[in-house]
Length: 208
Image (cartoon, rainbow, N blue to C red; front, side, top):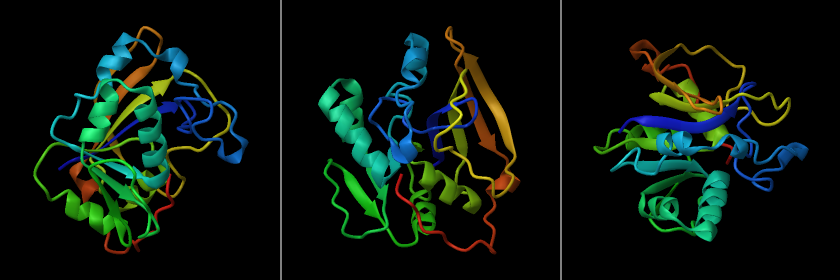
């Protein structure tokens, strides 16, 4: 399975709470829902639930709880896609309760568990939200592709997708600009950037 990140980010790299005002207010963040005004049919088609048939979801605990709760309240085809998909949830605690169907808990050495998941046949293993999980996996060279909706705004504050602890070379393989100025960009890692570093120690995953 390939590991693919699918997320909305602002031009200054913020990924916190793109969907609704109360999604994530950590750090006093007041711009929740910033991605909604830029939504249109083009974006919906690019991010639709049928984009990765036969795949699974990999989520941090916070993203798992917030995303599944919001879409089960809202209803619609994306709700069914989320509930039906196999879901793997990274958490510090082995006692974390998983409220939604088809969910499996990952704890302990999460990068190693993800490495084992990637050996399974099937479609993409998709990460949405889950910023801390993404940051913990990137140094282990486990992510194959970033699919980003880059919005034409500067938020100036909020949790960012990437940290400042190293350089990773990416290759742009596809891009589309929506009528509202959002850039849909697909980046892949080169083969040399996917090789695991033997000197990297396993990191605990902060749920996101």
